[in-house]
Image 1 (cartoon, rainbow over the protein chains, first blue to last red):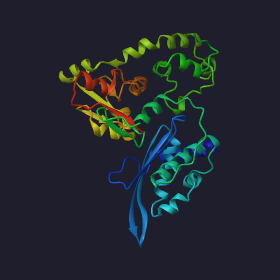
Image 2: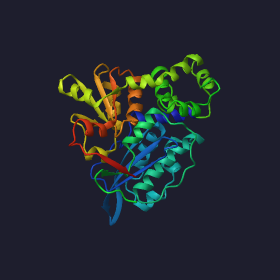
Image 3: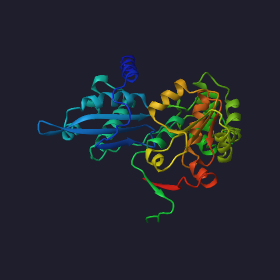
Amino acid sequence: MEDDLQKKITEAIRNPKNMGEMKGADAIGTAGSADCGDLVRMWVKFKEQDGRKVIDQATFQSFGCETAIAVASLATELIKGKTAEEALKMSGQELAKDLGPLPPMKIHCTQLVEGALRSALGQPQKTAAPGEKSGSLLENFSQSSASGKVRVVPLNEPKKD
Amino acid sequence: MISPATTMREVLEAFPGARRALFRRYHLGGCSSCAFQPTETLEQLCQRNNSLNVQEVIEHIQTSEAEDQKLQISPADLSAAMKNGKPLKLLDIRTREEWDSGHLDGAVLFSQELMNEILGSWPRDVLFVVYDHTGSSSMDAAAYFMGHGFEQIRALKGGIDAWSQQIDSKIPRYRLEM
C-alpha cells in the first residue's frame, strides 16, 4: 500500500496544481505547528455563479512536507466551484481521497491542508496534538518565510501592553 | 558533555548548532526525510545511518561553534562585496510582510518555487548570502545550502537588523507581532 501511495505522491508533486502565491486573493489561510515543523498556506478567490458565491481558484504553498504538497494540490482542485460552506464540510481525508488510504503518520498532512482551508475561510482550526519531531533545517527556515499573519511594527512605534 | 547514549534533544540543548553541523557533514536533520527524533540517541542515529563513527560525530558536534562562525558574513563585508561588482546572490527568508517593509537591493524573497530554482540552477561557486531579521534562521538556511554544495554560502550576521544599524539606516528596524 505504501509503495502505491508513494507513487501517487510522487506523481502529484511532479506536476503540482495551483502551487504558489495568488495575487488579488479574497482570503489567505495558514496552518502549521512549530512542534511539527510542517506548514501550509492557502489563497482563495471567489466568483459569483448562478447567484451563489463559489470558489473560483485556490492556490497553496507547502513547506517541508511532500505529502502535504500532494494533498494541497488535490484539494485546491476539489474545492473549485464549491461555496465556502460546502468546502468547509470536507474533511482532510475527503480532500486527500484520490491518494487512497494514508498511514497514521501521514494523516497530519491532510489535517494541515484542511486547517489552511479553514483558516482561509475564517473558521477556527482543529487543534492537533503536539508532535515529537525535532524539526529540520529546511523546516526551521522555511517557516520564517511563511509564518502567516504577522504584523511588522516599526521600532519607533510604542509597544502595546 | 555528550556521549553515545545522549538523546538528540539533549544534544541540541547542549549544542544549539548541532543540527547545522550534522547536516553540513553527514546530511542528517536537513529535511523531513533525513530528520531525527528528539528521543533517539546519538548511537542509534549513527547506527541507522550507515553505521557512522559515533565518536567522530561527537567530536564534530563539539567543534560546531567554530564552523558556525565560518558560515557568517558581517554587514561590512557584505557591503564591500556588493560594491566590488562580483557575482553575488542575495536571498531574503523573511515573511512577505517583512520584505514589503524593506529589503536589501538585489535580494529575492524565498518561496517554494524559488527553492527549486536555487537547487536546480544557481551557481554553487559564487558568493550567496542569505539573511533574515536578526541572523538566527539564516544560519539554518546557510547550513542547509552548504549541505547542498553551495560552497560560498554565508548568513548575514545579525540579519537585516544589523544591516540597518551598521550600513543603511534607511532600512527601517522593526519588531514582529503575531
